[in-house]
Length: 378
Ligand SMILES: Cc1ncc(COP(=O)(O)O)c(C=O)c1O
Ligand SMILES: Nc1c(O)cccc1C(=O)C[C@H](N)C(=O)O
Image 1 (cartoon, rainbow, N blue to C red):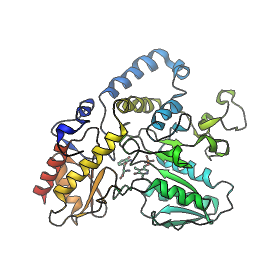
Image 2 (image 1 turned 90 degrees about the horizontal axis):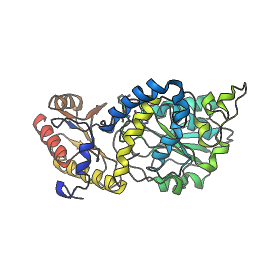
Image 3 (image 1 turned 120 degrees about the horizontal axis):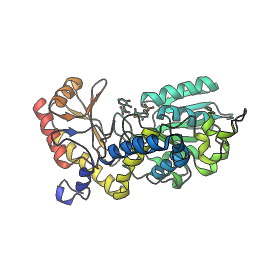
Image 4 (image 1 turned 120 degrees about the vertical axis):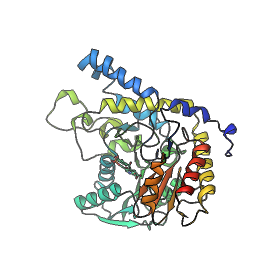
């Protein structure tokens, strides 16, 4: 795909989003923009489902929403039905996944990407402390896995640089030494082609408030493949993961299938806002989304890479997600001035400017307006 908007097969999709035309929003990798249908759906859920049906709502679709919405996300990440459940935060799901992955292991170490988004690193450390395993931060491309490794936690796309890891190769490398792999898909779900089933991935987690546009704090998802489900024993044995939650039995027996990854009462308002947001994906091809993400980021990069004092952190080749990260000693001040000019990206310490490109609603014109503003500010 070129930067010519007339050849952009997704140009019309922007109309499905509630965005101000004078704002260039390049932070959808942190908080996605609202699809227009979400407000009406949430209103309907409050007024008609909650308001009129009251407690009956639970038996009229709410209870099964975590698995039903999970299946919709499964279609975007190469997971057949019955393997994805939505609920809790990504942080909580990282904890559940890692604890389940190391349970009963006779291996010695957990490996984590040394530059990971902090919550993943903090939780990997907690799991190591709770289980007595060692935590070894490593270069994710050369993690040095061995027969000592119980599990490796990797980010598909790095939050800071936008670097994309080779999921096929790294999953195969973990499996060669008998280690498990947990993938964090926060920065790739919904915008990159992902084939969890085909690659035999052990477990995966991800956010829904970024490129999936579920709204602030929308619940996370957790993938547990069918074959691994009977052996998946997660530590947070809440009643909604029980085989018979309404039996109110004194002892915990995990539910069948992926439901055993549930913990407590699902957040229905957020869950159904996410459900509505996912409708957009029924109208687009993931291959077009990926192609546009690459084209948008290439276009922006070409416009800014020679600006004075700027270094580009994001890989120039196709091993990148849908953001361009720039390094500049005054990154924080520059981003503040860009936001004053209605160009919204974000700053990450110590010196990184991040510009996220959401192919569903960002245009090539957005890239040009952002680059022009950056040139002015510099
Ligand atoms: C890679 C990654 N993992 C996890 C999270 C966050 O997890 P939580 O939704 O629990 O705040 C983020 C962003 O906040 C992230 O970028
Ligand atoms: N989860 C966030 C939040 O609750 C507030 C502000 C930002 C975030 C983010 O998602 C940060 C994001 N994961 C990042 O890549 O930096």
